[in-house]
Image (tube, rainbow, N blue to C red; front, side, top):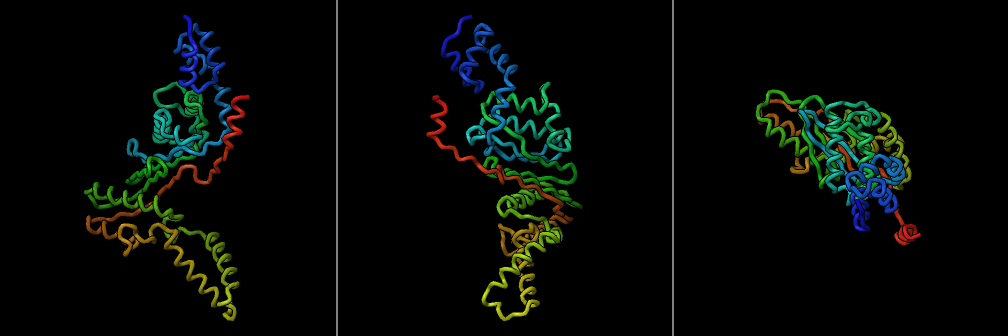
Length: 306
Protein backbone atom coordinates (compact mmCIF):
# COMPACT_ATOMS: atom_id res chain seq x y z
CA UNK A 1 0.00 0.00 0.00
CA UNK A 2 1.51 3.34 -1.04
CA UNK A 3 1.51 6.39 1.22
CA UNK A 4 1.90 10.12 0.72
CA UNK A 5 3.48 13.05 2.56
CA UNK A 6 -0.01 13.84 3.83
CA UNK A 7 -0.14 10.38 5.47
CA UNK A 8 3.19 11.03 7.18
CA UNK A 9 1.88 14.38 8.47
CA UNK A 10 -1.34 12.76 9.70
CA UNK A 11 0.59 10.04 11.54
CA UNK A 12 2.79 12.74 13.07
CA UNK A 13 -0.28 14.59 14.36
CA UNK A 14 -1.83 11.38 15.71
CA UNK A 15 1.25 10.22 17.61
CA UNK A 16 3.47 13.22 18.29
CA UNK A 17 6.41 11.26 16.84
CA UNK A 18 8.98 12.88 14.51
CA UNK A 19 8.47 12.90 10.73
CA UNK A 20 11.34 10.50 9.96
CA UNK A 21 10.09 7.91 12.45
CA UNK A 22 6.57 8.24 11.03
CA UNK A 23 7.93 7.65 7.53
CA UNK A 24 9.85 4.56 8.75
CA UNK A 25 6.68 3.23 10.38
CA UNK A 26 4.66 3.63 7.19
CA UNK A 27 7.41 1.97 5.14
CA UNK A 28 7.57 -0.93 7.62
CA UNK A 29 3.79 -1.42 7.58
CA UNK A 30 3.25 -0.85 3.85
CA UNK A 31 1.31 2.37 4.46
CA UNK A 32 -1.26 0.88 6.86
CA UNK A 33 -2.02 3.74 9.29
CA UNK A 34 -3.30 1.57 12.18
CA UNK A 35 -0.37 -0.81 11.94
CA UNK A 36 1.99 2.16 11.74
CA UNK A 37 0.61 3.51 15.03
CA UNK A 38 1.11 0.04 16.54
CA UNK A 39 4.64 -0.12 15.16
CA UNK A 40 5.49 3.26 16.71
CA UNK A 41 4.03 2.28 20.06
CA UNK A 42 6.10 -0.86 20.13
CA UNK A 43 9.17 1.26 19.40
CA UNK A 44 7.78 4.16 21.38
CA UNK A 45 9.23 3.81 24.86
CA UNK A 46 12.44 5.52 23.79
CA UNK A 47 10.43 8.45 22.45
CA UNK A 48 8.42 8.62 25.68
CA UNK A 49 11.59 8.51 27.74
CA UNK A 50 13.04 11.47 25.82
CA UNK A 51 10.00 13.50 26.80
CA UNK A 52 10.16 12.28 30.42
CA UNK A 53 12.91 14.74 31.31
CA UNK A 54 10.88 17.76 30.23
CA UNK A 55 9.20 19.83 32.90
CA UNK A 56 5.51 19.00 33.36
CA UNK A 57 4.33 22.31 34.81
CA UNK A 58 0.65 22.28 33.81
CA UNK A 59 -2.01 19.59 34.19
CA UNK A 60 -5.04 19.15 36.39
CA UNK A 61 -6.23 18.31 39.87
CA UNK A 62 -9.22 15.96 39.90
CA UNK A 63 -11.56 14.92 42.73
CA UNK A 64 -14.33 12.33 42.54
CA UNK A 65 -16.35 9.75 44.43
CA UNK A 66 -15.78 6.30 42.91
CA UNK A 67 -17.66 3.34 44.43
CA UNK A 68 -18.27 5.44 47.58
CA UNK A 69 -14.55 6.15 47.93
CA UNK A 70 -13.22 9.71 47.77
CA UNK A 71 -10.20 10.22 45.52
CA UNK A 72 -8.08 13.26 44.68
CA UNK A 73 -5.28 13.08 42.13
CA UNK A 74 -2.93 15.53 40.46
CA UNK A 75 -1.49 14.69 37.05
CA UNK A 76 0.86 17.08 35.29
CA UNK A 77 1.51 17.83 31.62
CA UNK A 78 3.76 20.32 29.84
CA UNK A 79 1.10 22.66 28.48
CA UNK A 80 -2.34 23.94 29.37
CA UNK A 81 -3.47 22.93 25.87
CA UNK A 82 -2.74 19.25 26.58
CA UNK A 83 -4.31 19.52 30.06
CA UNK A 84 -7.62 20.16 28.25
CA UNK A 85 -7.10 17.26 25.81
CA UNK A 86 -9.73 14.49 26.13
CA UNK A 87 -7.09 11.74 26.06
CA UNK A 88 -5.26 13.40 28.95
CA UNK A 89 -8.47 13.92 30.96
CA UNK A 90 -9.49 10.29 30.37
CA UNK A 91 -6.08 9.15 31.62
CA UNK A 92 -6.48 11.26 34.79
CA UNK A 93 -9.91 9.74 35.45
CA UNK A 94 -8.50 6.25 34.86
CA UNK A 95 -5.75 6.91 37.41
CA UNK A 96 -8.38 8.04 39.94
CA UNK A 97 -10.31 4.82 39.33
CA UNK A 98 -7.18 2.75 40.01
CA UNK A 99 -6.56 4.64 43.27
CA UNK A 100 -10.15 3.97 44.38
CA UNK A 101 -10.20 0.26 43.48
CA UNK A 102 -6.62 -0.84 44.23
CA UNK A 103 -5.72 1.37 47.21
CA UNK A 104 -2.02 1.67 46.26
CA UNK A 105 0.37 2.51 49.08
CA UNK A 106 2.41 5.00 47.06
CA UNK A 107 3.20 6.15 43.52
CA UNK A 108 5.39 3.13 42.77
CA UNK A 109 2.55 0.80 43.76
CA UNK A 110 0.09 2.86 41.70
CA UNK A 111 2.28 2.64 38.57
CA UNK A 112 2.46 -1.15 38.96
CA UNK A 113 -1.37 -1.53 39.03
CA UNK A 114 -3.34 -2.53 35.93
CA UNK A 115 -4.92 0.41 34.12
CA UNK A 116 -8.75 0.05 33.75
CA UNK A 117 -9.91 -1.72 30.56
CA UNK A 118 -6.36 -2.51 29.48
CA UNK A 119 -3.60 -5.09 29.80
CA UNK A 120 -1.17 -2.26 30.47
CA UNK A 121 0.00 -1.07 33.87
CA UNK A 122 -0.57 2.56 34.85
CA UNK A 123 3.11 3.22 34.04
CA UNK A 124 2.81 1.61 30.61
CA UNK A 125 -0.39 3.54 29.88
CA UNK A 126 1.33 6.75 30.96
CA UNK A 127 4.19 6.01 28.53
CA UNK A 128 1.64 5.30 25.82
CA UNK A 129 -0.19 8.59 26.46
CA UNK A 130 3.15 10.45 26.34
CA UNK A 131 3.77 8.96 22.91
CA UNK A 132 0.28 9.68 21.58
CA UNK A 133 -0.12 13.18 23.05
CA UNK A 134 3.48 14.23 22.45
CA UNK A 135 4.21 15.73 25.86
CA UNK A 136 5.61 14.54 29.15
CA UNK A 137 2.85 13.40 31.54
CA UNK A 138 3.36 12.65 35.21
CA UNK A 139 1.13 11.47 38.04
CA UNK A 140 2.36 13.62 40.93
CA UNK A 141 0.26 12.72 43.98
CA UNK A 142 -3.01 11.23 45.19
CA UNK A 143 -5.18 10.87 48.29
CA UNK A 144 -7.87 8.31 49.10
CA UNK A 145 -10.71 8.32 51.64
CA UNK A 146 -12.50 5.01 52.20
CA UNK A 147 -14.34 5.95 55.41
CA UNK A 148 -16.96 8.56 56.29
CA UNK A 149 -18.95 10.84 54.01
CA UNK A 150 -16.84 12.42 51.28
CA UNK A 151 -17.57 15.52 49.20
CA UNK A 152 -15.42 16.40 46.16
CA UNK A 153 -14.96 19.82 44.59
CA UNK A 154 -13.08 20.82 41.43
CA UNK A 155 -12.32 24.51 40.93
CA UNK A 156 -11.71 26.22 37.58
CA UNK A 157 -11.75 23.05 35.48
CA UNK A 158 -8.98 21.34 37.42
CA UNK A 159 -6.85 24.14 38.82
CA UNK A 160 -7.71 22.95 42.34
CA UNK A 161 -9.13 19.64 43.54
CA UNK A 162 -10.52 19.28 47.07
CA UNK A 163 -11.93 16.37 49.07
CA UNK A 164 -13.72 16.95 52.38
CA UNK A 165 -14.06 13.91 54.65
CA UNK A 166 -16.82 14.10 57.29
CA UNK A 167 -18.33 11.97 60.02
CA UNK A 168 -22.14 12.28 60.06
CA UNK A 169 -24.39 11.07 62.88
CA UNK A 170 -28.19 11.06 63.20
CA UNK A 171 -28.96 12.92 59.95
CA UNK A 172 -31.08 11.57 57.10
CA UNK A 173 -30.97 14.62 54.79
CA UNK A 174 -27.64 13.79 53.12
CA UNK A 175 -28.28 16.28 50.30
CA UNK A 176 -28.04 19.06 52.89
CA UNK A 177 -24.85 17.51 54.28
CA UNK A 178 -23.42 17.38 50.76
CA UNK A 179 -24.26 21.06 50.26
CA UNK A 180 -22.45 21.88 53.49
CA UNK A 181 -19.48 19.78 52.38
CA UNK A 182 -19.37 21.67 49.08
CA UNK A 183 -19.33 25.00 50.94
CA UNK A 184 -16.49 23.79 53.16
CA UNK A 185 -14.59 22.51 50.10
CA UNK A 186 -14.96 25.90 48.40
CA UNK A 187 -13.65 27.52 51.59
CA UNK A 188 -10.61 25.23 51.47
CA UNK A 189 -10.02 26.01 47.79
CA UNK A 190 -10.22 29.77 48.35
CA UNK A 191 -8.56 30.18 51.76
CA UNK A 192 -5.75 27.58 51.62
CA UNK A 193 -5.82 26.44 55.27
CA UNK A 194 -2.62 24.76 56.43
CA UNK A 195 -4.30 22.82 59.25
CA UNK A 196 -7.77 21.43 59.99
CA UNK A 197 -7.95 22.75 63.56
CA UNK A 198 -5.74 24.75 65.91
CA UNK A 199 -5.21 21.57 67.93
CA UNK A 200 -3.47 20.09 64.87
CA UNK A 201 -0.79 22.81 64.75
CA UNK A 202 2.43 21.09 65.80
CA UNK A 203 4.97 22.50 68.28
CA UNK A 204 7.65 22.76 65.62
CA UNK A 205 5.48 25.11 63.53
CA UNK A 206 4.55 27.23 66.59
CA UNK A 207 8.17 27.47 67.80
CA UNK A 208 9.40 28.52 64.36
CA UNK A 209 6.66 31.13 64.04
CA UNK A 210 7.44 32.36 67.57
CA UNK A 211 11.15 32.66 66.74
CA UNK A 212 10.44 34.74 63.62
CA UNK A 213 7.90 36.99 65.31
CA UNK A 214 10.11 37.57 68.38
CA UNK A 215 12.98 38.64 66.13
CA UNK A 216 10.68 41.05 64.30
CA UNK A 217 9.16 42.41 67.52
CA UNK A 218 12.55 43.12 69.09
CA UNK A 219 13.59 45.14 66.05
CA UNK A 220 10.47 47.30 66.30
CA UNK A 221 11.32 50.66 67.96
CA UNK A 222 7.90 50.63 69.70
CA UNK A 223 9.02 47.63 71.76
CA UNK A 224 12.45 49.00 72.67
CA UNK A 225 11.67 49.53 76.36
CA UNK A 226 9.30 46.58 76.83
CA UNK A 227 10.51 43.58 78.90
CA UNK A 228 11.08 40.31 77.02
CA UNK A 229 8.18 38.67 78.88
CA UNK A 230 5.75 41.32 77.62
CA UNK A 231 7.08 41.05 74.05
CA UNK A 232 6.66 37.27 74.18
CA UNK A 233 3.09 37.65 75.43
CA UNK A 234 2.30 40.00 72.52
CA UNK A 235 3.88 37.57 70.07
CA UNK A 236 1.92 34.57 71.39
CA UNK A 237 -1.29 36.60 71.17
CA UNK A 238 -0.49 37.30 67.53
CA UNK A 239 0.10 33.60 66.87
CA UNK A 240 -3.29 32.76 68.41
CA UNK A 241 -4.93 35.23 66.01
CA UNK A 242 -2.90 33.70 63.16
CA UNK A 243 -4.73 30.40 63.76
CA UNK A 244 -7.85 32.12 62.36
CA UNK A 245 -6.00 32.43 59.05
CA UNK A 246 -4.32 29.04 58.79
CA UNK A 247 -6.75 26.64 60.54
CA UNK A 248 -9.87 25.68 58.58
CA UNK A 249 -12.27 25.39 61.51
CA UNK A 250 -11.15 28.70 63.01
CA UNK A 251 -11.33 30.64 59.74
CA UNK A 252 -14.18 33.06 59.15
CA UNK A 253 -16.76 31.27 57.00
CA UNK A 254 -16.46 33.03 53.63
CA UNK A 255 -20.18 32.86 52.82
CA UNK A 256 -21.09 34.44 56.17
CA UNK A 257 -18.01 35.94 57.77
CA UNK A 258 -19.72 36.72 61.08
CA UNK A 259 -19.14 33.10 62.18
CA UNK A 260 -16.27 30.65 61.99
CA UNK A 261 -16.37 27.53 59.82
CA UNK A 262 -16.63 25.45 62.99
CA UNK A 263 -19.66 27.39 64.28
CA UNK A 264 -21.34 27.23 60.86
CA UNK A 265 -20.95 23.43 60.75
CA UNK A 266 -22.38 23.17 64.27
CA UNK A 267 -25.38 25.35 63.31
CA UNK A 268 -26.15 23.28 60.18
CA UNK A 269 -25.83 20.00 62.12
CA UNK A 270 -28.16 21.29 64.83
CA UNK A 271 -30.72 22.36 62.22
CA UNK A 272 -30.56 18.89 60.65
CA UNK A 273 -30.95 17.19 64.03
CA UNK A 274 -27.58 15.47 64.29
CA UNK A 275 -23.83 15.87 64.42
CA UNK A 276 -21.31 16.64 61.65
CA UNK A 277 -17.55 16.54 62.13
CA UNK A 278 -14.98 17.42 59.48
CA UNK A 279 -12.37 14.72 60.03
CA UNK A 280 -9.91 15.59 57.27
CA UNK A 281 -9.45 17.23 53.89
CA UNK A 282 -7.08 17.26 50.94
CA UNK A 283 -6.40 20.26 48.73
CA UNK A 284 -4.33 19.79 45.57
CA UNK A 285 -3.54 22.84 43.47
CA UNK A 286 -2.03 21.88 40.14
CA UNK A 287 1.73 22.42 39.82
CA UNK A 288 1.89 23.90 43.33
CA UNK A 289 5.59 24.23 44.12
CA UNK A 290 6.73 23.25 40.60
CA UNK A 291 8.88 25.87 38.93
CA UNK A 292 7.92 26.49 35.32
CA UNK A 293 10.71 26.59 32.80
CA UNK A 294 10.88 29.88 30.91
CA UNK A 295 11.89 28.89 27.38
CA UNK A 296 13.35 31.40 24.95
CA UNK A 297 11.02 31.18 21.94
CA UNK A 298 13.65 32.25 19.41
CA UNK A 299 16.12 29.70 20.78
CA UNK A 300 13.45 26.97 20.68
CA UNK A 301 12.61 27.73 17.05
CA UNK A 302 16.32 27.80 16.17
CA UNK A 303 16.75 24.32 17.67
CA UNK A 304 13.84 23.00 15.62
CA UNK A 305 15.20 24.16 12.27
CA UNK A 306 18.81 22.99 12.78
